[in-house]
Length: 356
Image (cartoon, rainbow, N blue to C red):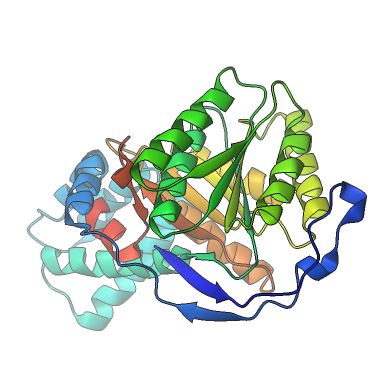
C-alpha cells in the first residue's frame, strides 16, 4: 500500500513560527533507505466487492465476447460497450487498435481469447498509474487533498489516516475546509474513530478560520511534533469556479512557505460515477495545482468505470509532453464506507473486474 523510507535523525533547526522564518536546513540532510511496507490484509473480499461494484460496467463489455466468431460486428459491439462504459473516444480507439494488433500477432480465433487479450491491453494501459504512495522520503510528508463537493474527500482522508496509523505513522490532519458546515466536526469524528481503532490522530482546526492559515499552522505543528504525515482537507471546488480555484493555489503557496519542498503530494479525490466529468476534473485540477495522485471513490455500483482508461491515456500523453514531470498515479480505489473499503489500485485487478 505504501513505500516507506527510514529516516536518519538530523540536526535540523526547529520549524519556523511564521511564514518568513522558514529554516531550509530543517528539510535537508535526510538519508532514506527503502524498507518493506507492512503486509496488507487479504484482498480477496475487497476484490470481490470491486467486481460487484463494476458489474454494471463489466456486464455490457463481457456480453460482447459471447459472440460465435471474431468479426467486424464483434469489434463494433465492443466499441459501443467501451463508449457506454465512459472510456471515451480516445481510449476506446486506442484499446481497439491495440487489441486488433494483439489478435493478429497471437492469431486468436475464439472470442474468449480476444477477451483475454483485451484484459492484457487494458492492464498495459493502466499500469503506469500503479504506484505506491511514498512516506518518509521527507521528514514530514505533507499531502494536500482536493476535489469537488460530494466526491468523498473527507471520508477518504479518514480512511487514509487509518491506513497510515496501522503502519505506525504519526498523522496530523488539517481541517482546512472552513466553508462547509460541519466539515471540521466530520474530520474530528474520523480522527476519533481512527484513534479508537488504530492509534492517535491529531487535528488542527480553527472556527471559521482562513483555509491557508489553518494549513500553515498544521504544517508547522506537524514538523514541530515530529509527525510523519500531515494531510490537509481543503474545501470542495468546482474547477469552473476560477476564483475558488485561486483559493486552492493560495493554500498550496502557503504550504510552501511552511515547508519549501511541500506539498509533497497533491491528491485529487474523484467520484467514479461521474464518468468523463472525472477526466475533466483531473485535467483542470492538474493545470491549477500539478497533481501527483488520485483517489477514485464510489466504485460500488458504477456503470462508468471505463473512465480510468481515459484518465490513463491522458496521463500517458501528459508524460510524453513533459517527461520531467512526476507521473500521475492512482493510489487508491474506494468501493464502500467501511475503513477496509479503501485499497490500493492494481491495474490487473481493475482490468479483470472491469471486463466482468
